[in-house]
Amino acid sequence: MSELNSMEVDTTETIQDIAIKLVKEQLSNESCLASVPTERTIFVLGSKGVGKSTLINRFLDRDDVPRPTLALEYSFGRRTATGQGAQKNICNVWELGSLANSSQLIEMPIRSHGLDTFSSLIMLDLSQPDRLWTDLESVLNGLKRAISKNASQKQIEDMKAQTVQRIGKDHPDRATLELFPFPIVIVGGRYDVYQNLDSEIRKHVCRCLRSIAHTLGAALVFYSSKNSSLAKLTRDTMNHLGFGSPSNPFRTPSFDHGGPLVVPFGADSWERIGVTPSNSERIGLSFSTQIPQITMANGILPDDPAKDAGFREPTIDAQRSQKDDELMYVLKDTEIRMKFEVVQ
Image (tube, rainbow, N blue to C red; front, side, top):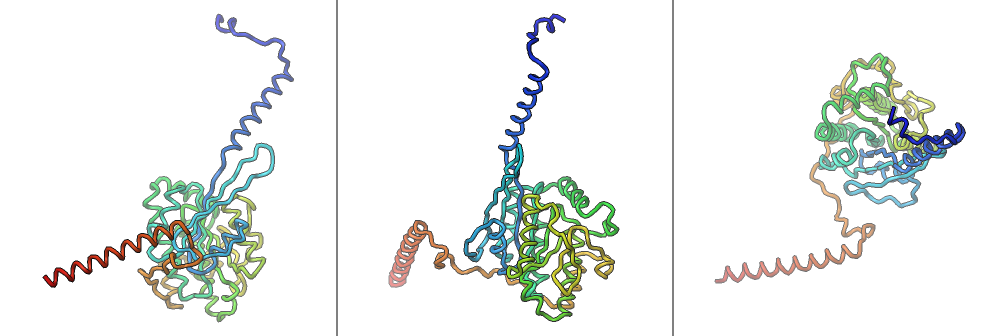
């Protein structure tokens, strides 16, 4: 009681004063929260030359002329939501240029940002069905290795539980699926060229992509930069992954192989696809039997960017030129010494 008696109580403070004080404290707390940005990460990888950079530029509202992505490139987008106490949202965007010799590069985005707010957009070239599974298999194997090296088994299982929520806990095929621990959207690029391929080939491609997307718990959309509706759909999909808005970019699902596919998370089933329950290995084997695949060539390095006018950096180029001259001097000096020693 002595402690209570010693406390100073402001008896002049009315209920209205107290309410105003509480509101101010709440707004202050919301302001503090708003100053801390929330981050999500999208990793874009897949077939070479399919239009990944163009898609990223449209997503980030950039007018840059796309250049070939040599290795791994990073960019980001920022958005501030409207409303009182709104937070600043940041979307980290990583792009992998080539799948050849890329195992270490694929680890970087996961190692940098973790899995909690991570998602991947796998972009495949529909116009080259004889490379489709080769590219997709390379991506999936690379992501699986990166996950196993940079996440604990408990974290992977916790994330897979969120994938179950995304596709639906009561999905009839749930027990047969090989779910990934983060959202994946498979994008079939260059649809404008693909739609002119033979109908039987398109049927095999659609069945393969629907099957693998289903077993991974992924979404599937077809895309062409020359088709405004497909371009908007894919951009909305990236906004959904990067900022959470729109909450449902897949407004009108489409499962007909005669047109562009739009398959939301958890919307497909083995019965609807028309195949028996399968796994990724059998899906790839079946597709490769129907459409033989070109093996990915390892060890092929891209052209030297120092000789590309699109990658000029005056300071670095000058230093490199100096080092090249020094190297040539050393090589010539060594050659002269070796000739002199042979004469001796």
